[in-house]
Image (tube, rainbow, N blue to C red; front, side):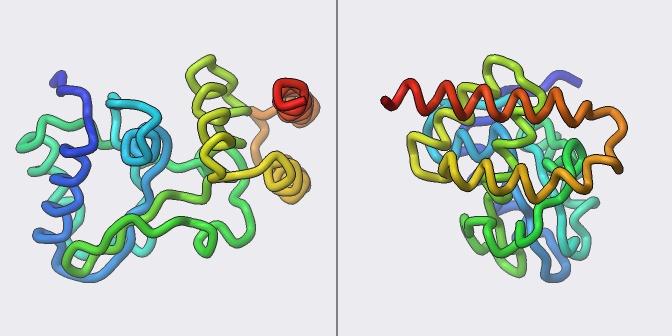
Length: 180
């Protein structure tokens, strides 16, 4: 079923509905387009990408209804599906709101940015530039986070570690030149 794009008011309705319908506490981490929409560098996104950790009680029953009620695409996805999990990602995830027993966060921007750099689409690179401009992550933080995940890249055989390193280094060098 084709659904409409998701803007900030729709994300607000999504959070309120999940909070109302959840039967227990938990946390929802937003990634990608939802973060971009809530923080204002995009007006809309196609999918609402979520990580549930810990999973709020009754959340899947709630999602089944909400996706149709709000005409929203909901995907269970996070940067850790594409790149190794960064140490301390929970502590570095930024609080968005609390609705009922459910807390909502932006997933660690270092991980979001690195996952986008690994994928390398033009929109992804624009998103990482927006994160840098808004101070959500720094070039140094990205370099340090990349170094922290390198030893675990072996668990992600689809990723060419050297190609990923090159993408990160070229992006960071290009951003340094753009600022200089």
